[in-house]
Amino acid sequence: MYRFLLSRQWVILTLLSLVLIPTMVRLGIWQMHRYEERSARNQLVADALAAKPVPVERLTSSGHTVTSAERYRTVTAKGHFDTDDEVVVRRRVNADDEVGFHVLTPFVLDDGKVLLVNRGWIPADGPSQTAFPEIPAPTGGEVTVTGRLMPDETTEASGIKDLKGLPDRQIMLINSEREAERLGVQVLGGYLAQTAPEPKGDTPEQLGSPGDENAALNYAYALQWWLFALGVPVGYVILVRRERRDREEAAAAAAEEEKETAPTPASA
Image (cartoon, rainbow, N blue to C red; front, side, top):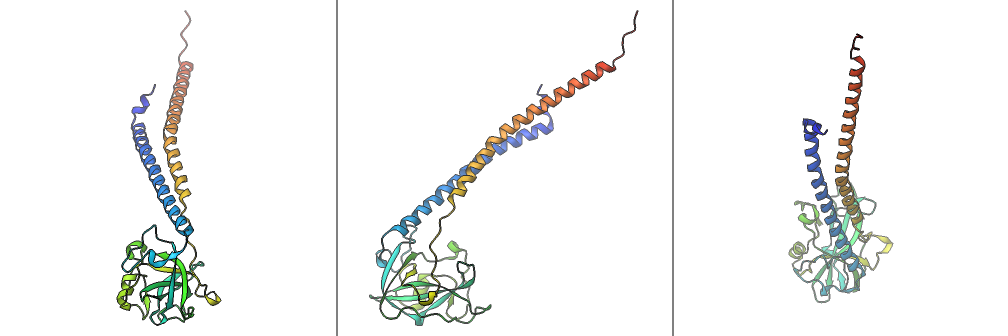
C-alpha cells in the first residue's frame, strides 16, 4: 500500500522533511532569544530614561567605561563650555537622514575635569565637508547642562571606521580617551548627549530620544518558524494520502479498463 515511499523521489522528500523540522524549530528558538535580548535592552533603556537626574560624576569618571545600565541615564553637570577646542563629528545624520556634523564641545567642570558634550546636529556647508563649519555658540559663562550619558564610540561597536588624515578639527568617533590625549586633561568616560538648555534658534539640532527595538517582530518570527515546523509533517501526511489515493484510483481504473478489454469467452 505504501511501497511508493521507498521510491527515490519519496525517500528524498522524507529526508528533506526530517531535516526541515528541527531546523525550523531551532530558528524559532533563535528568534525567541533575540526577542528576549531586545526586550531586555528596551527595559534597560526605559529604566534609564525614567531614572531621576544625577550629577555626572556619580556615574562616570576619567577612564570609566559607561555600562549598558548607565547608558541613557539623565545626568547634570555644572561648568562652562570651551569652544576653542570644539570639534565636529563627520558623517552624522539628523531625523530626516540629512548628512552633516555633530558638534562636540568640551565642557569644563568646576573641578577642572572635562565632560564631552554632543550639542547636536548641524548641516554640512558643502559636499566636500572639508572646511570647518560655522557653529552657533553655546550658552556662555557658567551653566548647568543636562543630557543623556552615552558610552564611548568605537569601530567595533558602531561599525564606523576611524579614518586618519581628516580635515582640521574633524573626527569620526566620539572617544573620551582620544580626546583626553588631544586636550591634555582628564576627560570623563563617555559623553553627554545634551538635552538642556535648549539651543537658541533650535540649532544645533538636538539628538532625539532613543527608540525601542522591535522585539515583537522577533516574537512573531519565532511563532512563524514553529508554525512552519508544524506544517511540514501535516503537509507530508497530506501528500502521502493524496499519493496513495491517486495510485489506488489509477489501479482501479486500470483494472476496470482491463476488464472491459478482456475477450468474452466463446459460447459452447
